[in-house]
Amino acid sequence: MKSKILVLLFLLSFSLNAQVYQLPKVLFLTTGDGAGRGTISDGAVLALQSFNKLGIFVRLENKSVLLEPEVLKQYQIIIAPTIRSYHDLPLPEALTFLSDAEMQNLSEWVKNGGVLVAGENIGRNTPNRKDRLTAKRVLDKTTWALSECFGVEMKEMNTGAFTMQADKNGIWNDINNAFVKLAWRLVPVKLAKTAKVYMNQTDGRQSYPALIVNDYGSGKAVLLPTFRLLHPLSDGGLSTGKQIDLFYHWVVDLSTGIKHYPVYVNPWKDAHTTAYCQTFDDGGTPEQYQRIVKFINDNKLPTVFFVTPHIRKDVQALLQKENRISLQGHSFNHPDFRKLNYGQTLNEFLLNRNYWHKHFTGFRFPYVSNSFWGMYVLNKLGFTYETSIAVNHLEFIRGSVVPYNIPVFKDDFFVSLDLLELSQIFHSDWYFYQKVLDKKITYNAEMQKKDAKRFKAYLFRYFNEVVKPNKGVMVYLGHPMYSGINEITLQPLQELIDYLKTQNVWIASANTVAERWNRLKDLKVFVNEQGKRVSIEIDSPEKIEGLSFKLPQKPKKVNTAVPYRIVKKEKHYYLIFDAGGNQKVDLQF
Image (cartoon, rainbow, N blue to C red; front, side, top):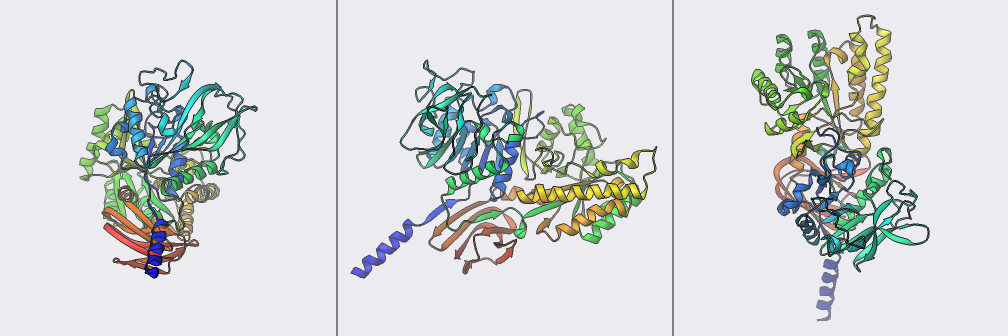
């Protein structure tokens, strides 16, 4: 009898030590920025890249989704930026202006297990711009439906001389920024017993809570002293990219719990840690096209050409017969889409489709100048991806090495598209070889070698400093009329490909990368940790070839009904198998 009791106690303690979690999906609320044509703020880019390192999918949406509780259930983390640069529309579109219904839906979502991250002024105003502060300049549960969710009451104070004190996580230990430009902010003055303070702020005489995590129902609500804490220094924020990265990784731990044997999805096929897509726009002589095609075949590179009808017939035939080449849309008349209305935009896509007798899935705007109507119509016509928003993180933050669904807006109309953005390199071969167009000079071999050297340096630096650290995708943009001038101008691309083949890079068509990303967004992963045993259960509506999981160490045993591989790449172990439907893998460490 005694032995049975001991066994039961052991099993009970074993089950109590179990850690069960779902690898989260993130909903990031934004309307986009700039001219409303699909670019996103610097802070949103850094968030995408931070989550991507853990194989966590992010969906960009505007705040109208807060009125769709069934949609909210699909996500485990919501990031709600409350500063203007994330909501480049009339003020009521910002998250400082929320209805009671939107706040109640957020509260219920947190109560049911979600993790919400927001700035201190979320929902401060009604949609018709009425301030919810009481007569005593306080925000509490009498007027603010998120008070219990965040576990706080807040009071408006002059915080121009406030500074942050070191936080418990050590992320902002060195922060000492005075909020001079934020002279009046809401400051927590009362906390619920369920609220934990991770960082304080002080005026030099008295300390107040700053970063707060409140346990609310089954979930957690994270309140920032200002969302500028998650915005980069380079664009008016308060943090470095590293600090923002650490914070979002901490948020993932809040969602999943502290893991002894963490398992993460690797976004790229077969445990590759980055991806490369080779693309060309049209333009050039038949000889230049032939040189590029030979390069493609010699290196066995899947390549996308973005085409118009203005290519010579013999070149069209050359491109169409090559198995490694896919043709995608580049318009009919090669216009500046920013000058076209809706009807003209639609005609450009449909005329090009009819000319080539092909339902294109990818597109690049001429002059890489996209437009609101262009993005909107591409989405309406069922395109999968576009690639015109260039990445430049070497000089400033623009574009993303992580694919993302595109938010656009025009006037008072805004919508989040299912169209994916695959951002290409900022400086194409044109930037380095454009002297070939200058009829006043002879673009000789010596000049070409000098420019090729500069191009190579740029390509290598872009991959090593931007793509590789963020586990992203590099989209090369070239033209036969520049890269294909001769072997000298083609050499930087050849050396890049040779290098990438040593760097655990998945070299794939842009079509394939976009298709895989769309399949990953529907993937659900559940992990059950019990002692040294870890069970991974997946639900994938569509087949995902070479799905890989990054493991904490090499497992001693693997039990699964599907063929699998354990490989070691870049000092990490990966579990690889083809996913589809409901599957389970048991690991023992």
